[in-house]
Image (cartoon, rainbow, N blue to C red):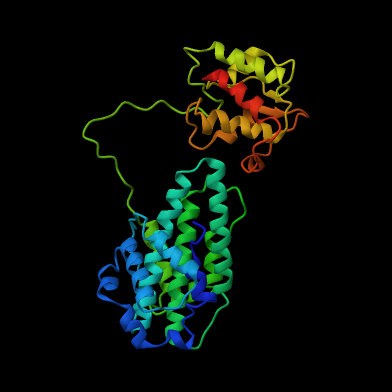
Length: 361
């Protein structure tokens, strides 16, 4: 993911800037648009693979990051569910850039989503933070870029459209993981197309295509479950406390955990064992547990029981909310949920925490 959006950056700031003299040679793009590139214009991963070959064969000078991004994107299986209405290219230069922008953008979306979904909550949030930092920096830069050439503005508008689509899609897909400040959809729209309302009906303008995409998303039909036979209703997830998977059969393990955490000064010495066990019952608690260790130790403890060893039931990415409901800091103040996600493993006490959690296995 480190190279994601390097091509977008290069179109704005680097070797792929369409207003450079060497990037306005129609003959150059006629050669670039090999049969393989055109054949795969609607197959993002294969297009990226063909682009690597074309860049190399024609000795197209570009940043190494761009080539690495294309290689990585060519390995991503992607399906883009929505047909995007975008500006229609009209010469070889605009055709090449339209294919390059749309296909790399689709692969980036699939790649980011896969990387985040394969990560635990803390790592997934950090990966999103890095992507949004790049995205919003590009959006800010391109929002002020204006050129006199019609073809250049066509290419920049196509890139603006897809930067918006990537930002809006990730914002919607991972709303529960984004605990850092980011631009809203309306703020991105205003930056990219401040004239949106005035020009949304003009089919030659970026505002039209942005408006069309947003309208298409709002009209997406609800996906209905068409299973042939009704399935048993799944057990309702409780967000009142953690539910230890061995609660019914290995209840005494919770006593051992309570004892170990208390002896190592991670929880208050006067912690009631009954109140402690209720935190792992899945039911509403009556008393919070006082965590006397530091926030990094608390975050690592939650990560061990939830992410690493999966000793408690799935909370649909709400484990930090539940943790802050069940535990309180030694001074009586609640933990800051947004900060807990980013805390690193405590170097001096991680072994004691790992041994304590081993009692639940």
